[in-house]
Image (cartoon, rainbow, N blue to C red; front, top):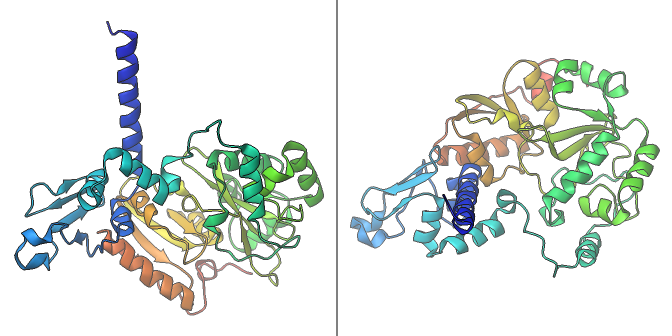
Length: 374
């Protein structure tokens, strides 16, 4: 029978092992190599100990298996292992130093820093509020979020997002339902995606202020510096759900075709692609779309799909989520979409993944292609 001390010791070891396994499952080894400044080409990198190799290892000898999260040099027996071993080989980091580096470079992977009584909550709030830029009610900020505006604690933001979504109405029998139907997106798809509609802006704004302080709502990114809910002209809300359908983020969409921008993102870092549930680790094809509406269009047709909020918003640390998937890029057929597909093609191929491109007619997006009406 284990003593209490031994039980606590082994429980801590098990907890640490679970955390390590979780980090390796969520973080792409190719993304780690890239953040270290290592060029990855077709799943290979140059050996860190290239002086041991003939001709300085000009032809890379280190293979990276994105699927297994491992690397191996075919010349040096001691150059192999997982992403923690890579950090040790390249930077000489201890395990503890590797964890600190990962927390710094990939803050979404390890979760929030544990609360410390020495940290002043009031100071944290005031610092985040002061960073919010001046924007009017119903502002028209660009679609790409600013990572510098991300709240320090993701759990704090998720709590506020959940409060917000609970105040909203399902899209049935709203202008959003008719808007979606014109784009050939129907009830079964919008129900599964948990779409919501701001039916009474003033009520939602008032009720949120009854649940949370203005400072907290500003810190979470929902309210602007003038004390207004930001989504006055963007009433269709599309939540980003995790594997257990918990909301971590959202986009809001206007129904007015003349209004720009069409989408208004929650301020802060995007935690993962839209419809993350499609990235289940099982072999198969997945369509990578530009925006949530295009993603819903592909899902409506019965194909697996995920979305990114803009062509420049894909993060290298998301590569690990695409393990075992063959990716079809179907971005808009415009200049930004072409550049985005070139960048993403190179990124996926460097990780050793299969990638194809869906060439749409000029000026169209995937919703246009399937016959949606604006």
